[in-house]
Image (cartoon, rainbow, N blue to C red; front, side, top):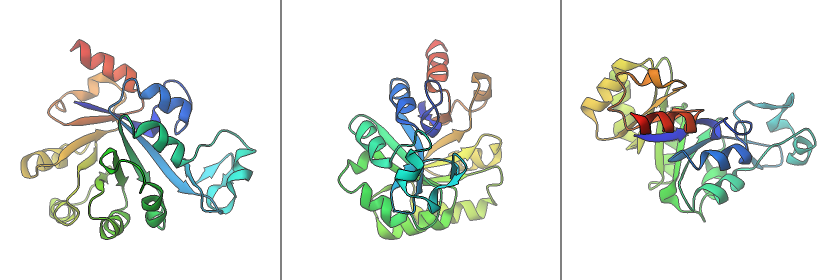
Amino acid sequence: MQIIAWRGGIENGNENTIKAIKFSLKWADIIEVDVRMTSDKKLVLSHSPRFENLFIRKHKLSELKKKGEINELYEALDLVTPKKALMIDLKDKGLERFVLNEIRNYKLENIIINSLQKDILFKVRRLNKRIKISVGFGRKAGNLTYIRKVVDKLSPYCLAIFKSNMKVIRFVKSNFKVKTFVWLIKKFDELKNLMDCDGIITPFPMKLSLKLRKK
């Protein structure tokens, strides 16, 4: 079972920071980060649209850096992709071309584009037929017919499905030859009935990795 470090992990540093990612690389198979864009078109790591109470899309990178620790996407690409896979979660529409341009000189086999917004993923697939895609499904994943349509059209590398959607998880495992990653796993006890999945997305890659080794 693969371990995916959610938001870069949070066991040794703030989420979506290079410090946290460096630590998680020891334990995770895949590092997941969230990406947004500044007003001067810099791609930065952040799950929230705000950084230190400033809207990221309305401020320059230099302004954000005066407020605190914020890292750029290229830093994560430099650190992760020579060794392991980087899953890039696109948080906003309009980032697709910028992100695909940013990753063009890196190992594409070690990059996965993820989003909960299917429109974003359809645009990514139109722009790049080879890039690995991860389709995110939240608490409300939609009906099974819709899921089948999305999988058929996107030909994804994996599906990232919220842990409470057991119906969807079972449907995917039974009907598609695609990796199934389950989120958001915080405790080992949550893995009950999920051991046949291909991976877990967790903010605690070290803790979960050590638990799985003991199993």
